[in-house]
Image (cartoon, rainbow, N blue to C red):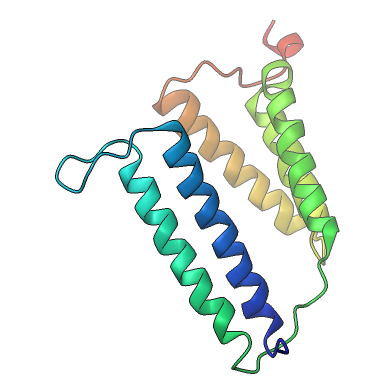
Length: 152
């Protein structure tokens, strides 16, 4: 057998892996119950089974239908976005929402193909304003707005 569609092959394998993980996790950690009286494991186990079935269909099609090759993975965007999220999480308390949002936006933007200061700056202003209005003012979450030394 020869893989004719590598994208479908790897997608099907991923679906099967995640589906089986959720089935095993649900059955191992929760009670299944029955269709009439469902336990906490019933819904995740059924969804995991359906995902496994979908993965099997996609995987089997990868041997029958030709498709494009899998493109190479560019790790720079993944690393920069992950690093931006980690920096945001660790800096939001000492630096405040406004500065931490700036760090997140600019670090994540550095992972892209092109970096334009004007566009990233506009995005930063919008996201900082949105974060302050929704999370701090609207929901009343106890996040500092500015660094501790500026709030006095």
